[in-house]
Image (cartoon, rainbow, N blue to C red; front, top):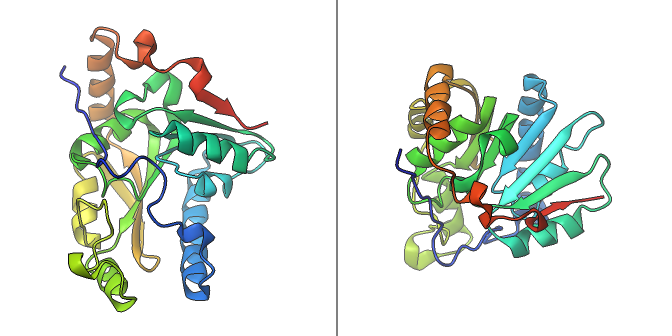
Length: 242
């Protein structure tokens, strides 16, 4: 089976282009708080005790989910970003395992989880359908995904006089979805269970299509060892906050 590579744009080396979590703007802080509240409510609905965030950036989102009895893991393509996340959240109990590994190299046995979270990542990858296929492979069985809600996102950027030459498009955003078009995309690999619309995002809780996911895993088992399994990512690139 041919592997699908999901490169980020050259200027996007992991992490957030704009640190919304660190904003001092009271309106932005309110919007982010509502986003995290909706995300937390959907996470609680799953009852998942093992959670893996793909594309975790600085780790703020996964850290907000820390609870006794939960096993939290997080990955990002940038080792520098992962080191910063580990340092930033090093005092959390239970600890979070941070790992520098690209989406296409995530392995089911090592990185699969009851709940996979992928927030504000899909708009950056060159092949979002392929990325969702990989996320389906990892989900056991839930995925919680979010993307900027368009065209609202770009309009709000323009209202605050940001990225005007690109009509409000945030640098690195290769794809743009309304709520309806994002749900349609997710339906290619998942059953969408609930959709929320915290301004200005679309957020969806999904359950993996079991038959397709099992077929994907069976094909993976029949392949030669992947780049990941051959040692491209060593144990030194896993960082446990303790």
